Image (cartoon, rainbow, N blue to C red):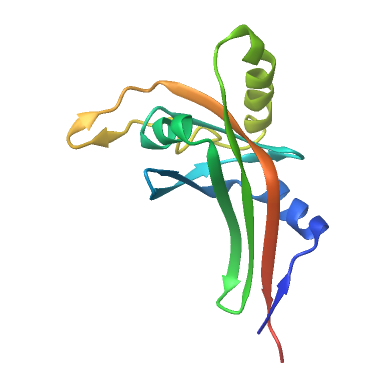
Length: 150
């Protein structure tokens, strides 16, 4: 196996076809990672979820990272990391167009609202389903791939 850096085009192609990413955020030097559905649109990743730890933390610390991968075997895989800034798309008039854009893009994927908007029970209590649309303004992308040899 040889590990190579992915080209810009390979990174864009993986982001375009990927649907589940692992969102990493942090608060008080404590990292937190959670899987979410994302849709890539050139300079943004769009997503949808409910209020919870990730949203509370991202509201305080806008710096985030999202990891996407495709794994065929231990010696055949692709991984892309996106670093960027959390931007909440609220119901405020200035966000309506982008919120609608996020919904339109996400709606192109089957079951786009899962896992972000399903009944969630934490410590025997059902969490209220308060929808949150957001985007990640992409500041950098990097990618690596493992290629089989021999």
